[in-house]
Image (cartoon, rainbow, N blue to C red):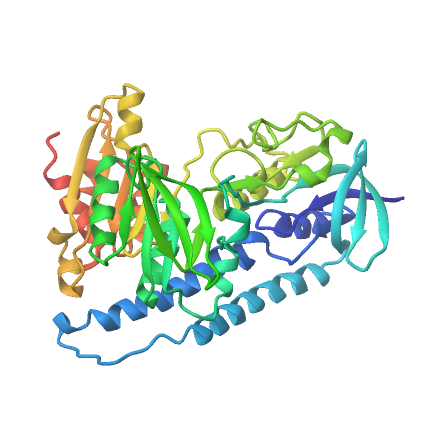
Length: 461
């Protein structure tokens, strides 16, 4: 059995940088990865999807360039080339991450699957076929999550796609049926509609992106339907059947009425589930919740002292930037002896539909539920000079503010560069800058963020 000071399981956006920093701090460190360095973000998530979103945006711009005086006729979508570009960017990022780990002194990169066999002890079934037993005083679990597949009659027979396998397609689906009307499903649905697929979205809730405010959901529905994406809400698939020619028939229950939808491909996008079951955590005493997420305290430590969980394998927001922030908190607490916590940290996120949805802080719905006094500032993108000039006025800016302290409590920007605009107000929130101060900031003209002046101009103090 080999003894380490620290063992990290999973090389995602927390695991990789944490391994390097711990090794540099003098701790003998091992990082175990069963597949590829970089985790979901680099291999199956942010990097490949946003690369493909860029291709879809180019197709949209080509198809809609006429109003700006540019005529583009007979453009075509080259799916193999889109995939080749995506693969090249993923490989570059993955290989860069692997080389960074391999050249770090005091750090062993081990490819294999880790299973706990006792108190702070693991067996690694190495990809080479051998086995290793390792132990350490400190363990960091960064195994992430994987697509959740619901139990639907016939689903195993249809060759369904998930958020990973859909990016391996070399041909554009004739008709893509998307199960799930949230962030992943809508990004892929819009992407493949722009590539040329007929797209139908099935969402069990009363509206898409149901965690967002009603006006966000309504506006996004209009935007997607304007691109001829069919959206069924209050709907669920009860059965799939695949015919000999490959065509799939989905039986959909919509408000108690049964409907048949024929399609060529099905994307399952109803959420993700933590990759914790294979770790055999019971053998080392680490607790998980009902869904399998590893429970942690505000400093990301599990119920077992010295064992931490970071990223998507723990409960809470599942974003790459949160995983990375988890690493910085754990490292600074352990090595720099700080007393940082994940409690009350600002959690920004961006959905990369086009236009983007940038979000941070309280939504209006959340403010209502919590009984917080608030006011709403709202500005249609049709009143934003930059949006008018670039020819895309879809969406709006929205902020929730405290009428007494004038602090900004939450932001939603559905519009071009929505994530970048949201980030400007995130900085204001972090720095305690009030909305009446933002109102009179001097922003460079004509940026999207300049219209934050106008967003707050109509508010009465």
